[in-house]
Amino acid sequence: MKNLMTYFLLIIFSFSIFLGCENDDSIGDNSSNTENIQESASLEDFMVNFRSYLQNEEEDIEDLLCFDFIYPIKLQFDEQLVITIENFEGLKEIIEFQSTDNTKYGIKFPFQISFPKVGITKDILNEDIFEETIENCNFETEECFEVQFPVQVNIYGSPLIIYSIDQYEDIIEEYDEQDVINIFPVIVRMNTGEIRIIENNQQLESLLEECEDDEDNEAQAYCYTLDFPVEYTINDNEDEIENHGQLLGLIETFISGNNDNIEFDFPYTVISEDDEEFEIEDFALLVHYIKFCGDFHLETAFDFSYHECISSLKYPLQMTISGNTVTFQNQTQHENHFSDYDEETIENVEYVYPITFYLNNQEEYTIENEIEYAELIFAEDCEELIED
Image 1 (cartoon, one colour):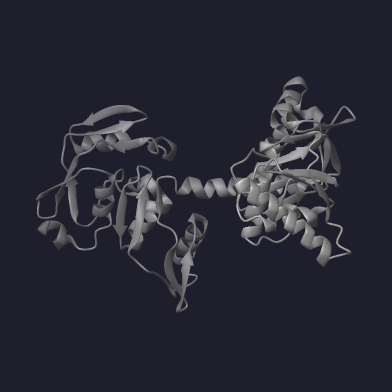
Image 2 (cartoon, helix red, strand yellow):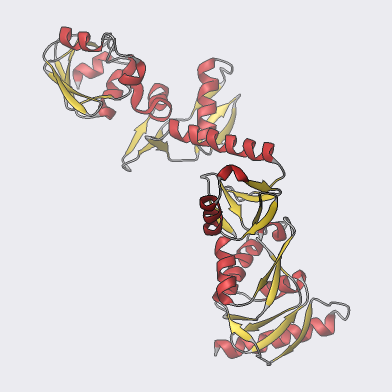
């Protein structure tokens, strides 16, 4: 029943275009001639993607699509009606007319497509070639962007068009990488969805540096994330923090004292890499979780000047040092061991929990994990610790 309904709706649609727009040459004659028409799952994928752009009211859809058809093309709908599409607007009208992604599409082979941004055309002889083209339009090569194939390279003065990452890797393996020179432009899609045209090596280097900066920001926050977005106030105006990059920038501004009118609207929910959640209401803890991650103990555990609420550690205690477990029987042995450690070595050191501290009243205070240690180090009220 659905196929029949689609068939009649498309006939009515095509007929209405013919009557209402005599000068509209977007849609050609329709028929039931299925010669050389083949059902195409790749075309279905293309249409679903196209429809999502329309539904999201994306501008410049032609820029978002990896390629364009060289018109006219003949499309079949649900093994019923065959329509000739004369141009991009005709394809857009067909997709806008359909309300769902459930249509089965067919297309007449062979046909041609173009990659207008790089000036390349390609013959699509069959479904296998079409499928490969769809799959290789976007291939993730960096965490912050995807390269859109095809790309062009120059090898010993001879230009070569590369249509897939597999082909590119074969070329790199066959030749010295230094002899494979990019021919610009290269089209990339950022992980935000933005399309960029890279015109030269300088722009490519800038893009890679941008990705490295993003990776550095993520590395600083590798242990914990926030339940974004979170709210803050700056200069009496409420705003939201959307990601780690924004948060780290705001933390730096706050710490530097360049803006005293920043207020973090606690509580925030912190999520560990093990999906544990913690509510925090303290800026120092926020910095520990998000900026310094597990390195907070570098300023406390190895200079042996603990938080003002703590008088000393209880021995014996154990630590892992570069993967090896070491037991310390007293503070002198502990201090001597770390007296000549450099910063790089200390980064490979962790406590073996649980560990016990003596508070200022000599009561014992045992902590079970890094989270409790951070809460102890940043405690603001010693009396509350004693009461606990």
